[in-house]
Image (cartoon, rainbow, N blue to C red; front, side):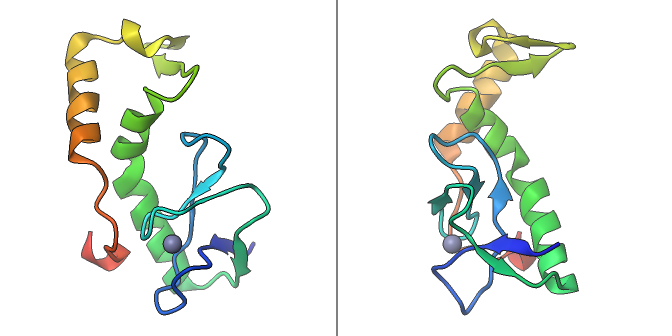
Length: 114
Ligand SMILES: [Zn+2]
């Protein structure tokens, strides 16, 4: 299966992360921050290098995307086996998400540097 990759930096081919956290976007570039609709990304051949980058970005961005998802319009979050409004999360989790959002996601970092 080909990877969806970012248009904007051919010098560092970046597999996009699939997410619905950002409005009107199904993919997000963890390298430059660009957001893409479902059919907008470029396809790229599935290589071991892209597979490795994708796995790293997926894993390393999960906490950031969860924290961002908790403030997305109409968001529900999965907690203790049910979908709830983010405001119903335990206060420690809400505080942790707020800390992660405030810290933000650092762009221009190659997967190999994370
Ligand atoms: Zn990009």
